[in-house]
Structure formats: structure tokens, C-alpha cells
Length: 212
Image: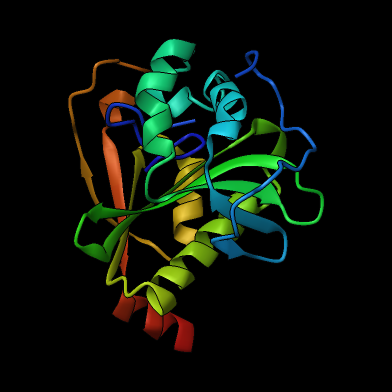
């Protein structure tokens, strides 16, 4: 799970300006049509014009605490490795719906090329907007869209065991704990000895919960 304090990257799960730069109020010209809107959020494709914002997000050590321990992202490496991934299928820039404030990004990404049957859920948001319920609002809406519009059968998400905040978001979005596991990562960071956790939700489970 690519989260704002969540699962570790696989070669560039992410998200320039200076370190710790907060979100800015602005609307970009020729923005893509929204992928999803909620009462407070507008999710759209990430575009090249988002580069500085995405890099600034990845240069916030608090945001990357549970990704790589907060190591700054080198602009050249970010542009070559992380940006193409974020501009690809399944990553959505998040803006405040009424003001256009750029908040970060969400992930609803198919795990194979065949379709949307199994998707990974994630997010990465500026610290300045943590604690306002945006992560939960976006995650719940993406889960609903996956099951009602995209033909998804299973939503999965992963994070570090010690990342309790992101685990709460998963649970509020309806995902259920599946397992704890250990993987080898290039960086050893505090808490990694506790391993990672996987959460998931199937369409049938979601239907039962939604109807109940």
C-alpha cells in the first residue's frame, strides 16, 4: 500500500519543491476529468504538471516515515523512476473539491493487466491535512467505486505492522486483517522488525456489510 505513512515501495511507490512544503491553493490549466468525486475530494489522473508537488510530498520525512524512514527523494531519481509510475494506471491526484487545494494522491491500481479484478488501495497525503478524515473519505469512496463500477472482486492493502494510523484507515474503509508477513527491504527502518500486514475486502464481504 502506497500510503502517507504506509506500505513500503516496490521500486517507487510514491510521491518538487523543498522538504516539508505544504499543499498549495491552485487550479491547473487543462486538468483531466475527475475519476471520482466525494463531498470534499476530487480525484483525477496525475499529470506532468504535478511533478513539483509530487516531489515535495516525497521529500517530507514525516510522510515517508513508514516507507523508507524519511529519506529525501533525489529529483533526478524521482523523475526517472517514481514519476512514470505515478503517471501510469491507478494513481489519482487528490484535490479539495471546492478550493482546488492539492492534497496528495490516492492509489486504486489493478495488480495485473487483465482488468480491475484485484486492485491495491493506497494513499499519500500532505501532513498539513492529516487528521481531517480525507484518507478515510477517499479510501471508502474508492472501495465503493471498485465494487460498483469497475468489476473488482478483491481490494487489498499493505502497510507496516507498526503503522497504526494507516491500519485504522484500512479498517474504516471496510478492509479486514489477513496476515502479518516479513519481507526483505533495501532499508532497515524502525519498526521493520515487526513485519508488514495485509488487509483485504472482497465484493461479497462488502455487499454484506453495505446491506447490513
